[in-house]
Picture 1 (tube, rainbow, N blue to C red):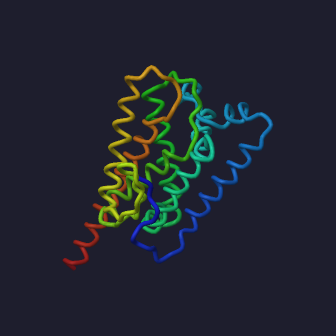
Picture 2: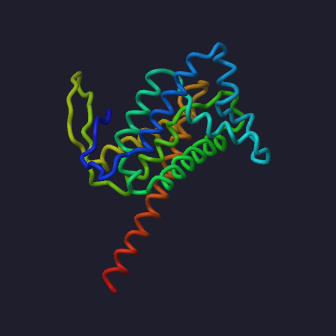
Picture 3: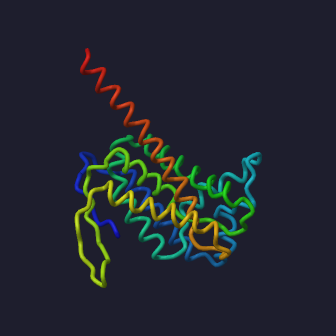
Length: 224
């Protein structure tokens, strides 16, 4: 399933989401134009085996890697998901809160992948961890929104509006199945599934905190 749009339009223009999208695209254009691509990736991508919690200089690639991508398809899908789901999350958290959330999801994504495979010498790159955080937050805070989706089924392609909860639970399930399945595989490289899971869990946690806070505010207002 591929998301095309969501049913709930925001009241404010998603300027931070747009800036993140533009930044990702511009950095990708720089990435594919450098003379030494391997050297560029080695410098700015996150490699678990080179990371040390005690050495702050090894933390920067966690952030820089989130603006690199492994190809046209990789960045297109990431930016599509960012655009479809990011505006509502931005409106919910506010501009500063949204930026901090995006960075927090990025860090949690990289750290979980590091915990699972600390000796990996394969560079990690992509905004998928941060976007997984956005999807996790959306799942908790906006489960009743509807997502217009492109669906591939029985050899055909059609569009259908699906409840956000259904779309995102399906997506999350594929991440967990793929992640734990990768632990049984001897193949190197591929997708950093546990980075997706780390970002997703961060988004779910923040979504639960925000939802509980909003309920408390609503209850207090009703009892005053």
